[in-house]
Image (cartoon, rainbow, N blue to C red; front, side):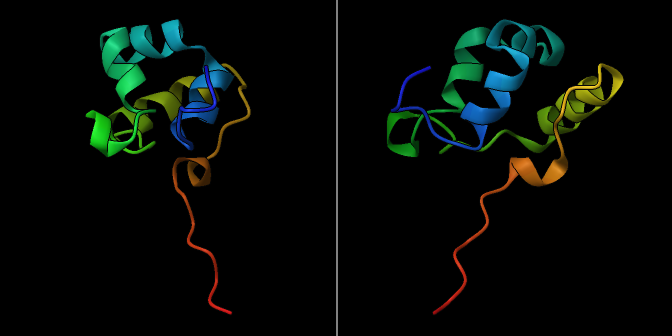
Length: 80
C-alpha cells in the first residue's frame, strides 16, 4: 500500500491483508482498494462501510487479530 492510501482503511487492511479482506467481505479487491482512496477519486475517503466493518471485526476476533471498533473511525482533533 502506498502513502496515497487513506486511513483508517489503510491500517485495517494492512492488519488483515487485502486479499483476505476481499474474501471475508465478499467484495472484489478493486472495491476494497476504493475504501482507501479519496472521495474525489471515487473512493470512500478511507472509511470502510459499516456492514463490512462488522464482518471484519468478527473475523479479527475469531482469529485473535488485534483490531478494535475505534480503529474504524477518525476522531476529530479537539478544539484548542
